[in-house]
Length: 303
Length: 277
Image 1: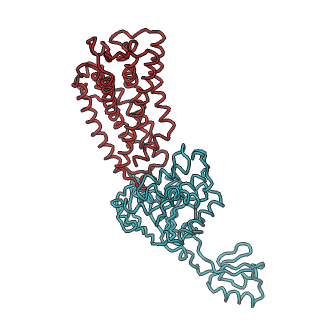
Image 2: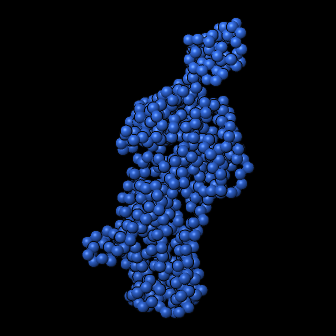
């Protein structure tokens, strides 16, 4: 669906996006993770033909971007760095104008399309109030409705849950899940690890303009070869497993060895009470911390 | 896209506020003239102002002369400066472009909606000033036709038919639209350069004010024929008998050149621009 090769964007001397090879496949729930300022938004803008690359190639839905971006944009719904709407008009009017401004079936069915999109994002009951009176969450939902308006094959959403409360975040995640199940490919960018972890199947991690990791989420959660043991008597367990214990933290031990069954049998045979034995898996956070060098918004002195 | 731009224009309260302000100026002037009946001395004050005291039907022409030098260009510059930069600031520009609306199309639609605004504003001023003029000064509805004011024609006693007056007003409107499109082109170009609507409007106004100053400066006589505001008031020549075409033609040609060059620059800048606001 989306492939980029050596995609680079320079602003003067700063490199916003640096040699990115993005690969989003059909049906993916792709999560683009990275701190603010890591180049996610610039990357997304380049995919949509808003920002022109300094170097590299982009292909979206089989067409080269930006040269033939107008051919694919009708099949893409996007939310780029916050929603945009005319503040003096109502949400419904905003969507109708948005719908009318581009190509497509025109006036026929417009009211229906707008109503349907509003319903999907939970704004079916909005009245004639102007958008300037909306809360941030409502604006965000309106922006999402705009992205869904034309039933896109590909959704590119930049920080879609900004300003939403926990219930709203959950609703949006469920909605995106439904759309994905209906065949929509979703590219979601976020600086929130938990959000990516909860929704995505494939993850790319951006750090200072570079795509440092790109893999299936399941593969990132691979076992570490260690086992986590919880026991009310950690001293006894530690004495028994002497030499294999890597870390002790209160009532839990991290032990080398991936065979949790054998460990359990060993502990039980020795009369040690165990409350849990779990193979340790890497967390997404660990993956990100290993792959990234430092926080992009830290400004340290030379010394 | 043009329909959408027009809908945006006419759904915005500010369009009507600006038009109302434009209509208010001639109205205020008319009230003062009607209550004091002191005409401006010939050769001073706005064109036609002394003539309207005897014939209110000429007031629309006088109103044009009142709003044209400052008020109308200011409002056009403000709206045109807002055209692209305002969309960028509201965050709607990126969504229009990915809708997708072609960048060239968007510029053209913006320009057309600006022309629509100028027509709307001038129309409003003409109608209200005609009503004002006829009610406050009365109209000479003699079958002999309307006497053109001597301070304009420099020949007293020339009369034209009401149809002739209407025709000349239409020509005037067309000429003013062309002049204002020149202003719009300057502001529209700046609007694609900066993300600040206010900055674009200020830049366009700075150009106009500079031009107005240079027009009156003898030391700048060499560049005078090429200044954008040099021929703005040339439409007055429509009310001469016979019509004096020389300045009108030059004015229209200059505006056309400004329009083509600046619109070209706006286009070249906009289609290659990173939309990253």
